[in-house]
Length: 418
Image 1 (cartoon, rainbow, N blue to C red):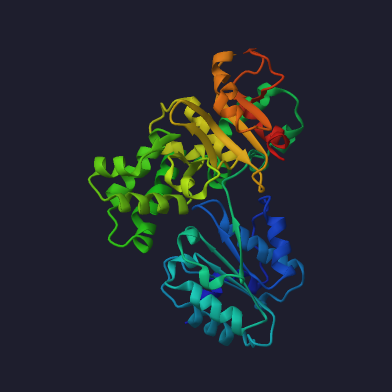
Image 2: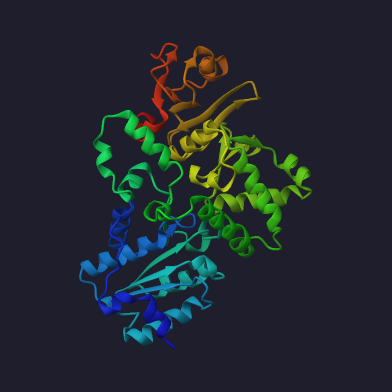
């Protein structure tokens, strides 16, 4: 009866988990693991390392001399068990009192359980000594209102470039001053942003990414989209992937696909919540207009473009990467007349940075004309940045527009901060 629990908790046999390479966010998770009672929610796309982070947190607790029996891990992946029943089984198996003893409960793939939020609320409110850590690929698609004030969310992205170098055992490159070294490695990174692809050189990246997308569309969707038309969902995903950065009109797309507009909206929201699509708003100071105005869509990161043909325009790939690196939320489009690829704004909405992506050998005044339009000038941009292929071949006054090579964004992050 309890064999499945023993299999999933090898630390009970005084064995730690062999995951020596650590994501940057791990240190933050460690602090929140021990500094408060709030539930830790580790969210993110499939295959970015959420389960590994949980095992590394267990290693951390063991290093802090927490008794192995006071740490419980359970994955609901392909196991149909109720949360409260699992908790009762753990109490019997460990001979601990969950009301008296301090324990750490790790629930992996919790999104597979119906109404998981209600069970966690019961545990949180009635067992003050239990620290809960949950993970899931589509938790953002679930309603968590019942856990308001009880949970803190951490979204796990695909690998940053610095993490990619760490996973590739090339961390020393961070100290290099040679641009050509970075450019070559960064071009590799663009299609290796998932840990498994970096760590296992025999993995076919295209097949790996296709499998992730297929699992999201043909397995995960059933739980969140009643009577889902998986073929339509797949078509919407591929429409976005084949033309990153396109403005999509929901009504037009619904007519083209022969489905209701509400279906298109729900399906796109699901793809966004699953972490494979990014939505960017046409900026407006008016919250109502922000939702009404046109929106641009991208694959969440460039590695996902492996799911389509190999001949996708490299400029589209670089634009997708800039959206990922800057976690872009806004762009500017003035009725189709002037457009700025991305607009970064601070929390007070008082400072703005415009970012244009021009992946070309030579950039001219014409390429940056939108930055100088009367419409854009009214926005009072604090910085204007152009992401280039070769900043040495610029044919305009750089005093007012700052050029940054696409593969050096990670080194110039301070330029995008307020």
